[in-house]
Image: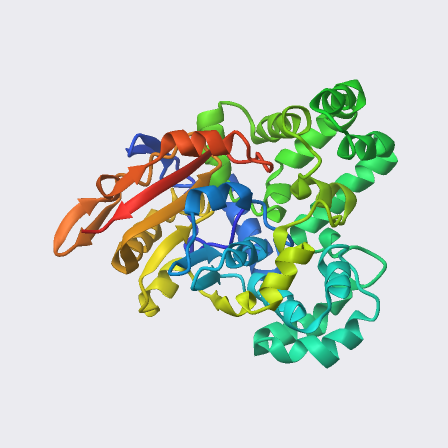
Length: 425
């Protein structure tokens, strides 16, 4: 669901205990199964491009952020789609931060393509997920714009854009999408209904198609086990900590949570512009259903200079803020605090200290959670002007706006969405 986060370094005890922190039960020590899941997740994120597209809806973010020309945004990179989307609004700087260098390599390749390619080729590359003679375009036009690590990565993985298979079926999350498409085509055999659903003109038609064949054909016992397995969730970028947040508040298993989310998407929200689900069900976007950086207008604005305002940083959010002297007006933290909420709570406290140290006098914070309610942020204690203060006492939340926007979320895989103003004085 979000970027890579620090992994626990010590093998935990097999003993299990619980403690209260900010009203949220925390499992202090992992059982062996949890330790295995944590190691599997760490291996996936150390060796793979996890996110080949962003899984957060920037339409909500724009209404929450209200970006202006004097603003500086820090956002977790993920696949870079939303960093580019924010840049289209014209803020002074967009800093994309991620611990996984592959995620920044992807954003750097997108920025290179914006600078060097014409729209039609760029859309073939990142809209269709494939570009004929990519290797030639890469060597002659794109490679020189990349950082050395990113050059080495795409030197080895340029085949991700070959004409045989879409880029959106590459990487660990793409591999899950590829398997789900195989299941749709070869096992459930409902491809025609999936295609019809994506072209539906009304909610009534969407619901009829979903209820008639798709729900029962896809959500079998096998698929529930597959979607809910630790391996699959790790490939999708969902660590054990986030799964615990979901199950703590949802009261059911995460596979049931995902099934409920998908039913909402396909039966209660218009599908015609839902490019998040389309790309994983089809392996490509269309020009009328795609992220803004892939539209002709968005591409033109970025190419005209706005892309130069986006910078990538391969490090933690805390590490970036410790070394970045400029005040930050907007923090988009995605859902990564779920990752730190239990076994890495000390890192979360340290990150919030860096946030308040670097925040502009009035700044805005956006974050999401797999859980229905986040109780681990407000109790965090930080030091401001020599005094200990709780983060919750410094934040003014906007729950009505957040709830209204969250209900319209085209992704709909998050339990909750938060918009808050942070005052450091």
